[in-house]
Length: 255
Ligand SMILES: CC(C)=CCNc1ncnc2c1ncn2[C@@H]1O[C@H](COP(=O)(O)O)[C@@H](O)[C@H]1O
Image 1 (cartoon, protein in one colour):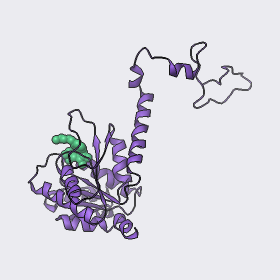
Image 2: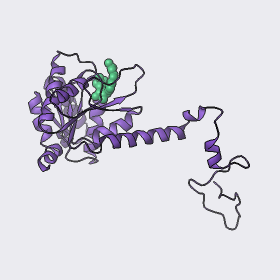
Image 3: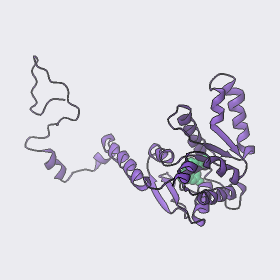
Image 4: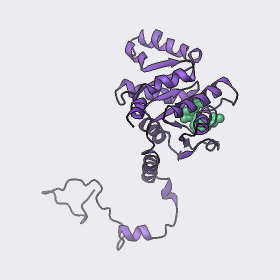
C-alpha cells in the first residue's frame, strides 16, 4: 500500500505500510466517509466487518466473565429430558459444584446444559450460559442467571476454557465430543495446565476410552500418557470431587 502522498520513488522505495491510509474519492476523508449515509448495508456482510463482530464477541465475553471467580464448565447432550438419568446427574453436578464454591458454566441450551444450570441456580450459585446462535431458534434455558450469546463457536469455546479451571463432561453427542476433544488437545499440548477433565458415566464413556487405548495408543497415534488426561466418574459426587482437586479447588481454598 502506498504512503499517504501516494508517491514512491524507485531509488527510495517505501516499505509497504500495514494499516496505512487508503485514498478515498477526491475531497473525502475517513471521517467524512464514516459520517456519510451509506447507500447500501452490504458492507455488514464483508469479512472485515465480520472481524469487528468477532472481536466484539471476545470483548463481550471477557467483560461478562472476567470477575466470576473459580468456575467449572459442564458439557453434555442438548437432548436429555428432565427425569432421565443423565439429566438428574447434571442437576446434581450443578448443585454440588456450587456447594463446593464455584460458578457453573454451560452452553446455556436444553438437556444436560439446562440440568447443570438448574442445579447451580437452585443451590443459589452463579449459573452461567454461553449461548450459541443456531439455525433453529432455541434461546437460553430458564436456569441461566448470567447469559452471553455468541454467533461464533470458536469465540464461545475460548470462554469455556479461559474462565473455567476444569471440565465435567456428561454423556452427549457430537457437540459434547467436540468440546471434550478440544480440551484434551489443549491439555496434551500444554496450552492449559492443571485442568482436570472428568467424564461422568463409565458405561457411556468406556467404549471410547477403550478405543483410544486399544487403537490410538497401539497404533502410536497418541502417547499412553495421553489417556490419563481423562478421569472417569460414575456419580455426581465423584465427578465434583475429581474436578475440584484441580485449579478450581485451589482457587476456592485460597479465597
Ligand atoms: C435440541 C438441540 C439440538 C438444541 C441445540 N441447542 C444448543 N444450545 C446450546 N449449545 C448447544 C446446543 N447444541 C449443542 N450445543 C453445544 O454442544 C454440546 C451439546 O451437543 P450434543 O447434544 O452433545 O451434540 C453442549 O455442551 C453445547 O455447548
